[in-house]
Image 1 (cartoon, rainbow, N blue to C red):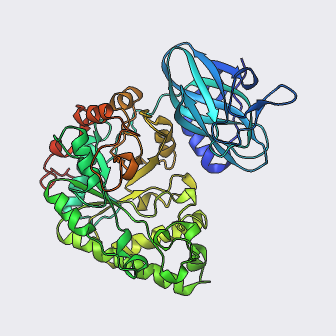
Image 2: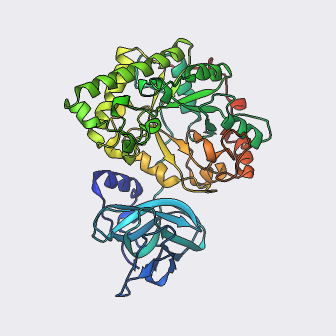
Image 3: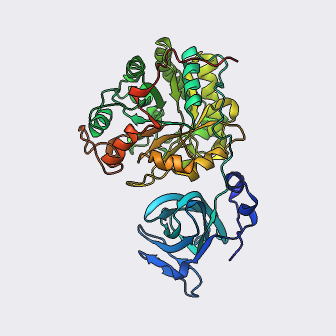
Length: 490
């Protein structure tokens, strides 16, 4: 058997790997199973290299290589992919077990190195494990598996202390409930910008048989900033959040922030939160090259503050998730890299909390990479957004463990966006209890736009019903009274 030789792609990757390598076996032990890629099955246009020692290609959808890994016992394993980028640039590709995406591996450059998809459940005996194209353009030498290191015993020991020392009583009550519940049960959630009775919530209600609702309602502040209101958009988000709180529900808010329309580049002015659809450059706004852009940032944050103030005045605590998915680079707030993003995150915190006195916010950071972490003093909860494909009910343990590596402090980890609902039994089996899930709207829950007919494209109705009826899942009907939830004494 070959020894593990791991090359980390930068400090962030090394930090994540250290979380995966908490035992001596992770650093030095032998593989539990290994298979040479060239002896595996070729998928799509993938092919064995001319010298017969690896697999190349993975350039088109469906391209990949599949091997059989035989492990001695069922459990969580780290999947190691010996790979290199075929054109020298960093590449991310999918790792699947029996055709279901369970993680990703990164080839940082043109040198051979080991990519790790950690904490993947394998059954005893043969498992069909594949690497398939996401970005593609890699060569694969071998695929191996080694038993994952045990998770720390204290990962769910989070104290209900918010980063804002002046947090409202209801915000502290909600955080206390989240901490008390963390590691024991998962809270159900659904994105629905149309409020408590919008089509996505109605779709879930119909899908489970008209018996219950999601405990968490996800919405968007997109229509509160001038980049949208100047085009005639209005927002009822505050009204909906207040209504859901009165129904004893929880609200989480993201913000697809559209810059001022003067930065529109003519591509798609409705979607200028995407970097490709705007000329706004965050780095220039933050470093003084674009002072007008900085003024627009403050103006837009102030507009968001006005909406959030309505919720605070009504006593509504908010799971506030701004500037999400930054490290992906597809939104303008992430397109300039981590430094200006972190500056903006801190600016927003200071503006909302210290300037506007918004104390009803529980800060959910969703940057999804350690290099983008703004610091423990700005983060109450860490969120991961995961879209593994259709009908994939895995716990996504690898992403949970990755999130643990963003900081040495103990923070709640949540599945802030998802395509498929994770199977609660699988989460319990793997010891991975996300604080809540929040299924995205559209095709992830509805058969067609404007319809409340539940779609089984991503989560089958049987799994939806199982999740909402599970004894370890909290729905709106099973939430305690959050307005009187007992606070812990300091």
